[in-house]
Image (tube, rainbow, N blue to C red):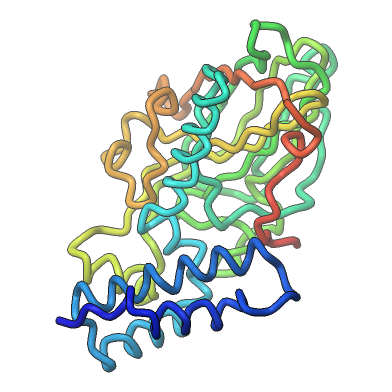
Length: 301
């Protein structure tokens, strides 16, 4: 096994490759790329990665580009970003609140904005299409760090249908564009309620890059039944989270590492329906940036 990464020649190579010897460009990008190059080189040396193995890996990444949004949570990187942000919060003395967790790749911007003020309406329905499954209802409150109701919040909700398919990404093409997707404008009391058709857990696309990788790692590619949320409100930090149904067989064995304590409610099932009571607690924003969404690329219908 070689030991050349720290040699002057290789160090100079990476400095030049990252543009450190040039005055132009983005200094932060240069520093990040420099560290990534050295980390990759260390891995190549440590495991004696052959030329064929390197190019096979690069080919996998090229062919699997359409599934990077699934591969990132599947290998734990998206969950690590949450842990990283949690650690930064802890260092800053920010504690409590609803846990953040992965967004996943299946949000679609522009879902219908509906009136969810419970003093005016009691029927917010997410589901447009027929679906032969139980009815799901959810309700609760949105409060701030001191228990105060968060007024004028917008709750983004999206989930799969009973076949495990999301509208806009449904391979059958059978769903309406915003089936099981809404943005709900809450009233001043911070209360919310909605109904929809029960989602089901699903597996990553058969034969796709994510499934191939999971099989190569000896892992499965299954997610439990779950519902995704964004929460935004003036003066509060935007929250990205989701709940996994606590009675699903994969509730604590989610291939995407979306499971977190505090996000595992068990539905109360009665007859052909199920109800989940769940309260959200938001954090005060410390800057204008915290009131917005990350710049992650997202689909738009």
